Image (cartoon, rainbow over all chains, first blue to last red):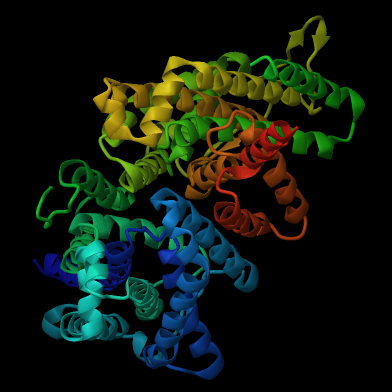
Length: 287
Length: 319
């Protein structure tokens, strides 16, 4: 019983962070109908941002959110404005291949600059876990969980309460009608891509104290990310949250109760099953 | 076809002349890699270029071929010229269930599904230790003494591998050329341009795609079999990684999607870059692969060969 509770809790904690990565991808897909294969690399950049902030300026990773997230937003806006914008009219397969190239470029530039070493961020409060109700919770993971919830809440407020947020949701629902309503779709796309990139970076920063970081970590994360957004339905933010938590729990249950070796496989099998039988996601309206 | 024939003959003559002209083993090694990647690029191009089905999981088919070939050799002592085609056959067989599953999906969804299938197959290769030797992998320590045409084959030289890779590349390009002119090829172009319309005019799209995937898998599997003998080492990271799938995609796209000679051009270009850079930095070539991919998609989505053909056609029309 204790093991089960422990497993569920750590699954939910990791799942919330997965969800954040998924939200970034799904928001971008919703507005632009593109699948950004370089999304994992944006998470990786966030992780390394946290690492170097901590290493060079003794900046706490969670404080460094305030520095890196705006920078990642600007980076995303630039990526869209100067690179992706010209590619998108060429069709979704071109965009897919283009972002695959971008992903390879960024990951290997990082490999070149930072070598392939596995790094960790050693935090003074990361050594001993807290134990509420006998369940061990690593403090960095708990802090990351709380921050992830706060960021997601802020995003939800932005999307539902502000004009720009409403414009994003409108474009996501019906691009043609949005243009007719006078929404500057081009600007919406730019902001959305920046937002997606910032979310990926933020997730990377939150994950950094709990994971090994290395330049090709994005490869692993992007695959998880696809599982999440497909589970929840491409383009759906609540779906991505549910999918992220589902994957986190499935993985940690799988690691304990199924062979540790095949635990990564559970996600993929789930993924294929959902893709084939409910392509609009577990919680989607169905086609 | 009348213009393609002399070009193909010239290509074969040049191919045959290279090992006679040089004894530089590094140069031969690069040529072997170019030919191997031509096979792999052509394998991907058959499906991705002609049928427009972008697979991100072709490494799985390559891995099936590599494992089949190396296991048949180590456990049953089957010679390379049987093992490599059988690797292709095994990959083709594996491709049927994959195709039947994944072809229910379209566009990016298909691509994501193939990615997941490839990851599952990699996990199987990692964990099914009684067959695949897990993460340890298989190593070929010695190749059999063989007499061919009254001569002992010298496995330490590059020439037998060059010949084999050349033969595979010729097979792959001939198969692509045949496909382009065939009824199936016409079906595939119809599917690529508009799948609903293709279905509406009575093409069995799923069957056309499954058959094409099997052909593509056969070529990729033979490439894997060749890889196993040439590098003499097979493990899940080497033969089933995402980056291998991506490299196949890049070669076909940079060379020219849906063209016969594109994969050869892409392989020459990218392998040359890779070998020049590799001396300085192990995975540095991937930086350039990524960069070229982006430049090609941005400035010439039809690829190097596709662009060259369009320019020559324009020049011919201008005369």
